[in-house]
Image (cartoon, rainbow, N blue to C red; front, top):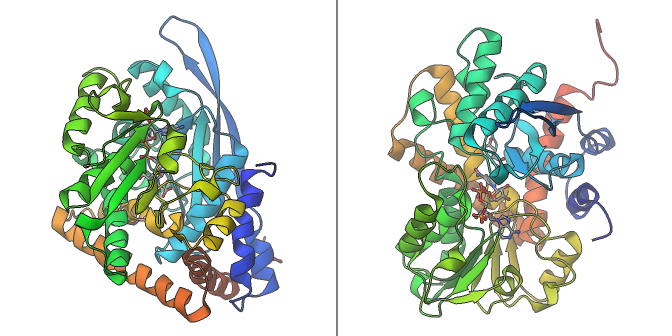
Length: 428
Ligand SMILES: NC(=O)C1=CN([C@@H]2O[C@H](COP(=O)(O)OP(=O)(O)OC[C@H]3O[C@@H](n4cnc5c(N)ncnc54)[C@H](OP(=O)(O)O)[C@@H]3O)[C@@H](O)[C@H]2O)C=CC1
Ligand SMILES: O=C(O)CCC(=O)C(=O)O
């Protein structure tokens, strides 16, 4: 892809703009991030040396509420990627009608090379560096790729130390023992599962007749693989950063999860093991997994996996984007021409931020919900917004992605116009 990720991401708006009445001021407002912070994080390594890691936090838009979004630890993290992810968060929160704007953060590194203590110093150092930029009413952090509840716990604790008061609502996805919500760990997958079930019912498709391939076997991908298998779908292929496995008759997902966990060991933070090391299955590359002849293809890892290079070879009938931004805009056009239904990230993976919202509400109230309350509320929200987007897509004859952007734009445009465009300031 020769254009950058943000240029590609913002092009998704163009089609949707033909179907909404939104002021030029609001459109101009949505083209730019509100504020971007780039920091250098010093970390004392276990061997006594000092290393500096680049970190970012982008608050894209806060018209609808405090900004919200995860923090990613990955070698590809950079300002362009974080800005794109913050842009998607803005639309995701609007699509789910959460009282949040969008943000994202990240640190450029391979976290698998750090010890647990180095990771803790890094995570606390990140919060020290961005403390003035975040807050429970300003910008709220959460997990994303290669960050987890343990890291969220350290971040919340560090912010509380800086503020000299316990501030659980500045971070979501924390361990349940220190204010996390039940169901947040499984929320992204559970939300995606509700969307898939709703859409499959519209196409009269039964789980046992439906084959699935999933790229990415982490928090989102592995959890969703297990849920789908439990409800009778035939999950025939899964993969992680090192490659994938395929079995025509379907994979035993719980046992694959146990094996990967076992290889990880008790002390390691990240899995060094891979699904490919599990014997008796056919091994395949990530590229091969994407072009398998399956009913459902579920990218649940990184951006830009389906591009002009491989879009013509995709055989799946439905693609559910659990990852953020796995399909480029040119690839989207090719898939649409091929009659492949694509269900967009800003709907499909929104279960995570929805339960993050529930966690934030519980933290502010100091009153905690049961798992069934969390999942019931999640289900209602996911189904309501899937139905809204489906209806828009039918009404205007547009793809589910364009329909989702129409839906988000309507809510964002109204909020921006209601607030005023801030082109002058009374009393500064
Ligand atoms: N966690 C959340 O709440 C949410 C996550 N998302 C999105 O879902 C996606 C996955 O996030 P999450 O599951 O949390 O992340 P995790 O860190 O838990 O898991 C990431 C998974 O992706 C695999 N992976 C990494 N690089 C590649 C690659 N090049 N090819 C194939 N697989 C790869 C990893 O492999 P390995 O195991 O070998 O390291 C791992 O299995 C991201 O796009 C994220 O933004 C969206 C909404 C919410
Ligand atoms: O839970 C959250 O606040 C955000 C999760 C996230 O980063 C995402 O949806 O991409």
